[in-house]
Image (cartoon, rainbow, N blue to C red):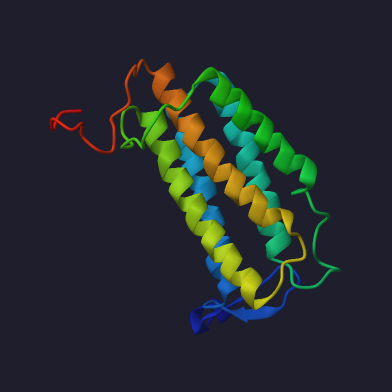
Amino acid sequence: MWRGDLGYSDLLDKREVPKHDQRFEVLGSLDEASSALGLARAVETSAEAKALILDLQRDLCWMMSELAAESEDARPASHITDERVNWLDGHFQTLIHRHPLGQGFVVPGDSAAGAALHLARTIVRRAERNVTQLHAERPLHNPNIIAYLNRLSALLYVLARAEDAAAGVSAPTPAKPSSNGHP
């Protein structure tokens, strides 16, 4: 019988932890976010978006390895630094400049790439909620993780809109119909 069959798993430092521990909720949601980004990268996205998405997936892998180690000895050097958060901001500002968002929210689904990025955005938001819960229980060793996830979800929103535009969507589907009942 495997230890996992009994509801336990190991962290990077080989510390056995119950699978219901908040840390696994965090790791699972980050893994889901990376997988959703993989889906976005696999569909018809621009070469620039594919490269950015791969960098984001790698950042999430670094983040997972940081969070999967309780002891400082087992924890890898932090990759999620102030500079990395600023790197996200730079991409966000570039995309906002190229693709102003306009007013109101949009309904995801105008393009396959945009929809996949919106899905990844919502999973990142869940990961952010899970991380803040973990932080409330046990303060994180790296405060940049929460800021990174917050900025990442914003970046994914504008990247989804940019990919919709690249797919030829000139007017995204608004979340609310106009006052006359038509989009």
